[in-house]
Image (cartoon, rainbow, N blue to C red):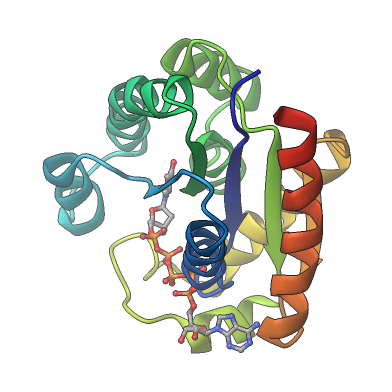
Length: 199
Ligand code: T5A
């Protein structure tokens, strides 16, 4: 069985980058092969998606999916090489941002995600949940999508919570207002268990 593939999701400023980096470093210290990655992934698509002002929501969706299709090929390779893969955002972000928040049809977005990933799904998704006002204050940089208004980010938060309810076996819901040390401990306990199950 291949090493675990997990994702980190949540609104802007939730702590995804901080926690995924921490887990990657901890795994390296333990001698576990790991690939820490993120989306949007391909540098030119990332720049287009996060900086270009005039994208329509359909165009945005297709660019995220194109990026995911390319990225997924690399994720599969890393898993085949026996690396655990930690991904800072994955397909759930498209479902929530382009579906729940931009208003594109959810079932259609699910199908397109399935097409782009070839069905690859994380075995665990760590959902870092916190009030929008707290997340936006923590945010390091405001890109094109991060600069959307409060109502947009609230739809994103509620979308993630709805998905976590829909798939309770995959999602681990974490209160992201907790101190980092507590979040690290929760993620470590869960990930160690996944590692035991996958080796
Ligand atoms: N997007 C992405 C879509 O619309 N569709 C998609 O399909 C995909 C893949 C990408 C943008 O693209 C959108 C979503 C986004 O708008 P991004 O590069 O993922 O953007 O950037 P953000 O999510 O905006 O990243 P942020 O850096 O703002 O959020 P993080 O990574 O969740 O937060 P992090 O770890 O950088 O932490 C922010 C600050 O909070 C502190 C950290 O030290 C840091 O200073 N912090 C805490 N402080 C106190 N207590 C804690 N528990 C803390 N955890 C972190």
